[in-house]
Length: 332
Image 1 (cartoon, helix red, strand yellow):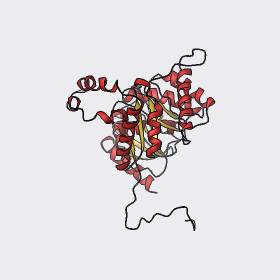
Image 2 (image 1 turned 30 degrees about the horizontal axis):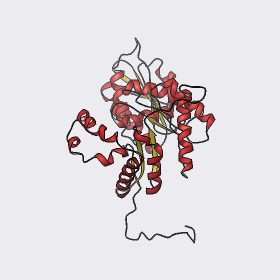
Image 3 (image 1 turned 90 degrees about the vertical axis):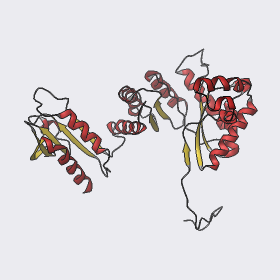
Image 4 (image 1 turned 180 degrees about the vertical axis):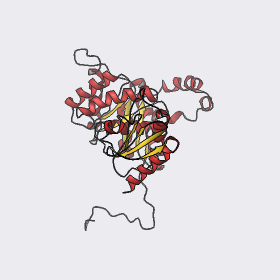
């Protein structure tokens, strides 16, 4: 603690909490939350009621909506919010909400819901995406914001890759990567792995988000697996497993899936590579780089450490025994 400070705040007897983060807002809707015709309506009826009102909004209504919504968030303990602005009626601009955030003093992540037309020789995406992002960077810089992160997401993998490559060459700001609206667990994870993997491998990107239609926890698991596969995250338990073959005599798929679920509940204090192999003939050798592993035989498994066989385990006990070994290695 330095001996002097510009300002000293006495928090004796108080509880200090971190600021809350609001990840999704439409601040322009703040002024119309209490419109009677829309409060109890389903989505289509709600939109039919409110769109005629929003159509009469202008810069001042956008600014006041944002001020009101941001003030409510600040009073709730929120210190960072994202805002999705899709409508620009009667001269309204992104500037209106950014200016409101500057007045309130919240960290702000403005998001455009419409893309500007590319300016470089009538250029189309990815030029348009990058030019739109840089235009808004210049806008927030003009309002004295300096801690800026750029995100140029698309559901098109190739468009996203090309856009971020161009952005990395055009501006010296941190880049937040993501394939937006990527899809369900399998399809979305594949698209995200391809798009983000290529960019991260080439040194592009500072933070990432995996966007999936499903349990949000799966987004975190997928993001960590992408980072671990590129050796950018050296933590957690990594499962390697074979695709099975004619020599497989155990229920390898069920066992692997169950172990994968169980290890999510283990606090991983250090990196650990676990192999689950279907064949005792080649398993230990093929997985010799694993810290720990099992290889199937006739109704049983061989347990091995660093490629060396330790003991045999009956198939019905193998999951519990493997989990015990994993927990033991994590406790050392």
